[in-house]
Length: 264
Image (cartoon, rainbow, N blue to C red; front, side):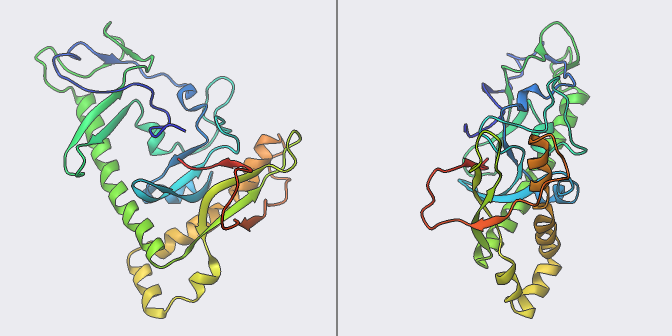
């Protein structure tokens, strides 16, 4: 899976080059149809946990929470045939598209980027302009920048959460059995969850600090969200809510590629 997932041709926004660029955003989520997992920030846990299984994946940027959207590569069970989004919550990673920040390498300076392949970009004044006739940011562009800055702030906090889970050795690699008619041995692999037994062995002082940092609440939301694997399985079988919860199994020390990864 490509690193930027839903992005295809990311280029920096240049005032002179994009002076006449407008964005006409549609209601379709076709651009996310082939994405089976996306990163989450911890501010999203409350709402995201109601719709998606939240797991953890190892990335170049640390241990990052991830929303599971499908069990096959290039599959998103929450995008309908007509491109509509079939969940009450849309992850911020998807809502920010076709914009994204790129770091200069030290994470202190960010450049606004766009996916130039997005069909909504045009120079015919359709939708929202990025720059006004004087070359200044429009209100729309300023709102977009504010959203991305807020997302980045939450991402740094999210990374700290992942680091704490790793530091406390609370995460373990697991697999989920999700049998399908065409593949009765299908498994979802490549992710980690919090080990409940390890959580119970933490000292009172450590647990108290997790509470003060709001991390314990996030852990419980993560564990609660794993029930959504059942709904996801049912959605794919057109039998939502009637499937037995897919059991999670501890992954073998050197897992073979027996299933489809949920890595983002």
